[in-house]
Picture 1: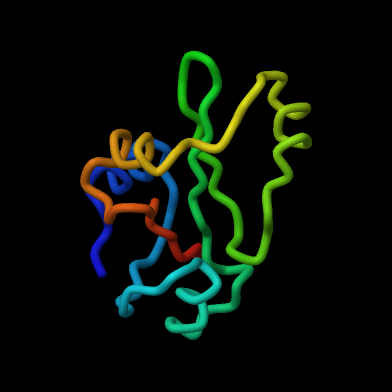
Picture 2: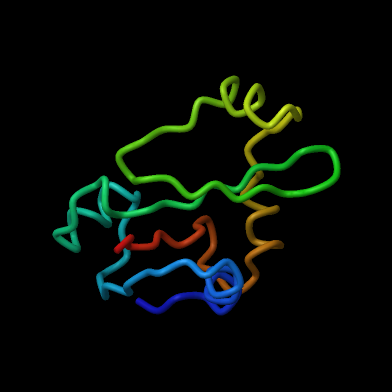
Length: 105
């Protein structure tokens, strides 16, 4: 598995250190962690949200869930999960239905 150029540029622009771990396609970030023999708290998953004017990208450990009401309170904006179509538009070079997970160092 390779990293999509859009995500690679984003991580480079934000000086995020990461490792690429080749694996077969999986159905979830937890499945990816298992396939790669990586603890779920060491594999990051990306979740795309939207507010009325822009998108937000949250990167969290695969072992965690984002509570939407808590996120809304934290950032002070009404946010919702981006749709599959929005993800495909924002990350045109990613596989359909997924923003690639990233292994944290």
